[in-house]
Length: 395
Image 1 (cartoon, rainbow, N blue to C red):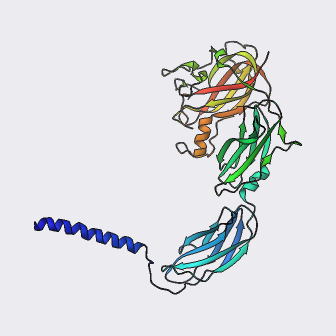
Image 2 (spheres, rainbow, N blue to C red):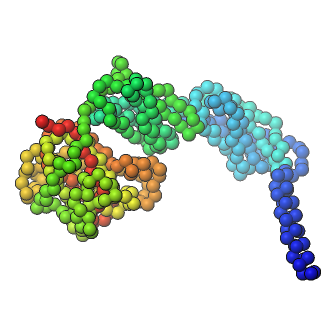
Image 3 (cartoon, one colour):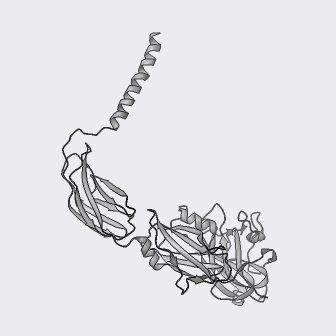
């Protein structure tokens, strides 16, 4: 009976100790009620959308932090706090260039605040407006192309808008990016004058002005295009083509509209590694999208560099590239530029969408060649999931 009583008493003592500790955590570290010395020699340096603030730390032994209190662009009070080991504070996320009042305090272990020190300064132009100044909206195949420069590499959301059937402008797509330069297109529009626009938003919910095309009426007429019918494609194998059906895959997988299936070469063969296809009709290509093999983004045998060739008349079975027209030299680009195996959300969004290439020259072709010169990790085999074509069929 005595042993059982001891077992009950011991946990109870532990519980009392735990609750005592929890209660103590919410109390000031010290009971001192004297004010600490405020920060001195404050220097405020305006930056884009904020300030860099430096100061001399007080010599108080019980100094715990320095904080800056200010009103943000939404009229809300905000603060930034740093520890006693740092002599600078950065304020970010201001959405305008109006003068700001910043109040600095020192705080000690007893949570006493110093007397306030107030400074006034105006931030430089917020990043969203710097990006806005570079934004261009231009005519593109089936829609509009948006391009911009983000020299500060600020994380932003680019909202792409377009006029719908009810004549109201609506959100079509959003791109999240911090790349220093970028372009994106929205498609699926008829070749009629259409209103396109963009809005830039930062992580602090500051918004740019609405940006329109630089045309007299703000309208753009998309270029006509249509998705090519893959059921018309016919396999052709030229003398210097590779076998793309290795490792239990099929040559036709690259045009089966299934990005889970792949084409695959043997490996150990020299580059370029090439496949050819009869598109089944004469076309002028506007663009293609190449989808990498699932599960290996920017890695393994996924194509990194490749050339696209075309011919209107069949040039012969020898596959001599001199008899083919070079349509485009392509390189798959990872938005973040990070090493293989490390991918950002932006990288993965690009991977899911596929690598898109547009054609500037209007070259009529029927026969198409895809010739890989380099894979992402240097593999000597090539594998990828799909190629999709858009353009205009020539009657």
